[in-house]
Image (cartoon, rainbow, N blue to C red; front, top):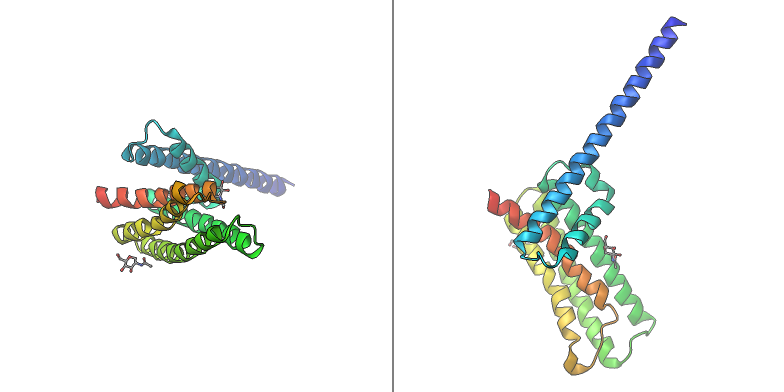
Length: 194
Ligand SMILES: *[C@@H]1O[C@H](CO)[C@@H](O)[C@H](O)[C@H]1NC(C)=O
Ligand SMILES: *[C@@H]1O[C@H](CO)[C@@H](O)[C@H](O)[C@H]1NC(C)=O
C-alpha cells in the first residue's frame, strides 16, 4: 500500500513537472514570436502599419510547430513552412478558378495562368530557401525568399487599372507577400547580426 502511494505521488510529481515544462516552453516561444515580429516590423519601417506585426504574430502562433522553437533560426523555418503552405493554398484557389471557368474574361484567365507560372517558380525558391535555413545559410535563404516574393508582387501588378481586370485572388495574393516577408526579414536579420 505504501509503495503504491509513493508511486502515485511520483506520478503526480512527474505530471506537474511535465506541465510546468510545457508551460514555460510555450512562454519562451511566445515571447520570441512577439519580440521577433516587433523587431522586423520596425526594420520594415511599418510602425504606422501594425497590421504586419499582428499578422506576423498570429500566423506563427497558428502553427503548432512554433511552440517548440527556441531561437529565431527555428522560427524562420516555421515562417518558411507557413509561406509554402499559404502559397500552395493560393495556387489551388487559382487552379480551381481556371478549371471551373469562374474567371470574368479571357484576359483574366490569361493573367491567372501567368500567375500560376510565377507561383511555381516561387514554390521552388521557397523550398530552396527553407533548405538553406535548415543548414543555417540564412544569406542564401534570404536571396531565395526575395525571389519568391516576385510572384505575388508581379501577379498583383498584372491586374492593374489600365486593363480593367480585377484579380479574384487580390486579398490572398497580397497576404502571400506578407507571409513571405516574415521568413525573409528573419533571415535578413540573422545575417545582419552575425
Ligand atoms: C494564409 O495564412 C494565413 C495565416 O496563417 C491564413 O489566415 C490564411 O487563411 C492563409 N491563406 C490561404 C489562402 O491559405
Ligand atoms: C536559391 O538561391 C541560391 C543562392 O543564391 C541560388 O543559387 C539558387 O538558384 C536559388 N534557387 C531558386 C530556386 O531560386
